[in-house]
Image 1: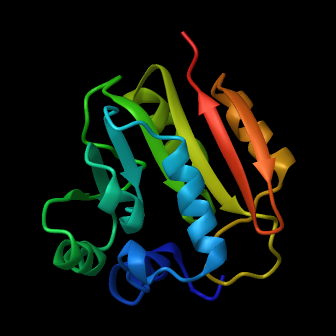
Image 2 (image 1 turned 90 degrees about the vertical axis):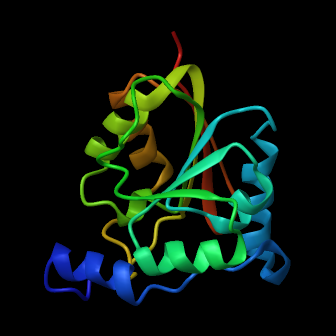
Length: 184
């Protein structure tokens, strides 16, 4: 990590991080494939929490609420999509009651979180029984200065076992794709 401490890292994401763009501007095949996979996991009538605000996803999904750390990113997303509900905050401290969401999206989030166990504890808390957590992470990367950690298939299995989640992991050359289920 190129940052001297976690405050500097979060400052980057609050001030300097790249902002997302509408779906029609995504010509990158890899990003488009990932977003299409996430959309294929979601139904129109589900209440969905998107931690990290994958704006092309939120553009399409009507029942989504976003949680985003960066105020500039929130402003940018809202300049494209004024009808989207986004809350400024962290996934590690969700301002929602227990068992409210049917689906939670963690698209390229785990590698940016200081303590993934704290994040997963909160995610599981606000997820309804039989709800799903949709996760994408870049495949194991070495020396990516924007990520606090990298994940392999094995590392994800360890994380999800801790929270008694049933899960299925698939992968391509670039990403690991996970569907977790909070079984009751």
